[in-house]
Image (cartoon, rainbow, N blue to C red):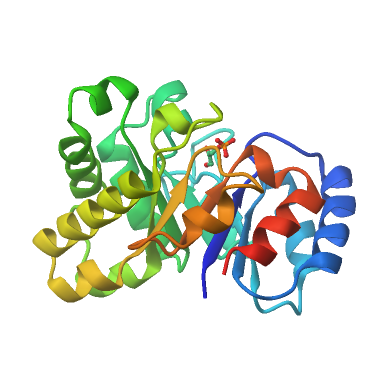
Length: 248
Ligand code: 13P
């Protein structure tokens, strides 16, 4: 079953989310695993509304790297779990760029999430300059190795790697199918080298960046790709339901 993740980013109040989710659920045909990474303020409500739908999960978009205590404004792994999140996005390029999250912080966040029973969606991806200078593999190797440093192989079953080329996010541009497949293969090779052939084969890899109702089904069927991470196109319930129902 494909894994289709929605990243709502900083969109929708709880009131708006309620209407949205009721509509989405009424159209969802249960053909994929849907993961809804909603704003913190919508977590409990989303969990309550999707209750009983086994193929719909709720997730967060960020997590504190600290367990507890003097971190004004931060949200801990335990708080996320208690609010209904089963997973969390870590290392999104917007957080790397705007909030200066580096490999060390991302690694800490992943460890605290896993320790507290949250699955992790790890975002990686190259800039346009890195693509143009043929540095995609080097960039991904560095990002993945830093993020997963110190993790045991059996922990990888709770990690999904989301390949999100930065130049594709919100731009309306996507890589060619063959390029997504090449990168999917590269990611699996990196995991194989750092762990084992089995780990490289079994790690979940999804694609994100300008996925929409027109390209979702095609991208989802790419070789080496297990699903999608959808930003802007998840915000409309009709459109996102269409993506969920056709991404099989
Ligand atoms: P868009 O789908 O809006 O390009 O955003 C992708 C993204 O950043 C998802 O995490």
